[in-house]
Length: 77
Image (tube, rainbow, N blue to C red):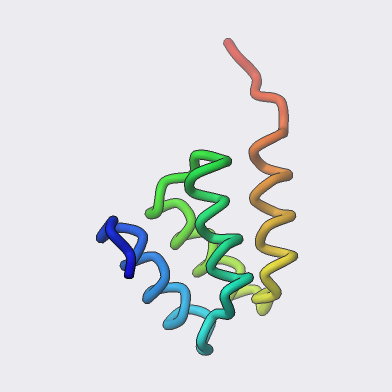
């Protein structure tokens, strides 16, 4: 049972977007993106939708893209 409704929503949307039941490992990855990397649920959902549109629904690829974007240096003006 998930205590946080936004996490429950993320898991449900991930199933819908990816068109399959996500595995426990997939769910752990999504939770890590939220809790460890600090990505908001809305951003993770947008990322899933974008990558699904590109045909890239492998969870390892999703994790790699997320991590790569988080570690890119930002330009401050």
